[in-house]
Amino acid sequence: MSYDGFGDTSGIGLYRPADVLSVHDGKLDFYLHTKAGRHLGAAPVPLINGEWGGHIYGRFTVRFKTDALPGFGAGWLLWPDSNDWNEGEIDFPEGGLDSTIQANQHCVGDPEEKCMAVDTGVEFSSGWHTTTIEWTPFGVVYLLDGEVIGKSPESPSTPMHLVLQTATNGVKPDASVAGHVLIDSVTISAWG
Image: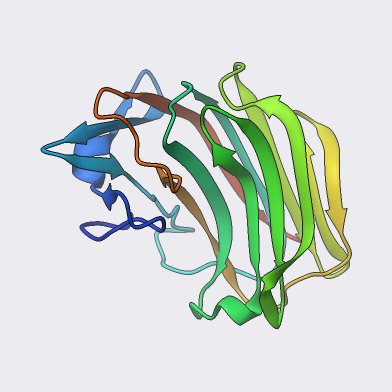
């Protein structure tokens, strides 16, 4: 499923999966562009066994490739099933698609605070990348292309689901900016 028909998180763009998402050559393709003056993005939510909702703890891996697209970004996250931000938020990868890959974790009980923040220095558009979130009762480990880039001892303890939020990043894109984010695979497994 995907967010559909309402404004993106930055308030600049619109989630329109029908105009953005397609599948070809075994890959999910986000075609980020502007249509009729609206900057379009998508935020698909992988369903586990065809059912809405996530689980507590697990391993979440995404293999992807992006174009450098000023004004567009990724905020792929684990979000509480309850929709209560106080239960935490885990963001990886996050950042402008014309910038570097970041990881951020918002604190349980005080989500305005970040319990962990890392800028990897690796450009989103520098080729194929694989990001992994390992979420356990003992903390969260962040891996980029198989290497640990960050750790947090804090661990949310309520069910969360993955959202591949890809839209404007707070900077209005030029109407001529258009390009792709390709997802080769998404793997979600329970912990333990």
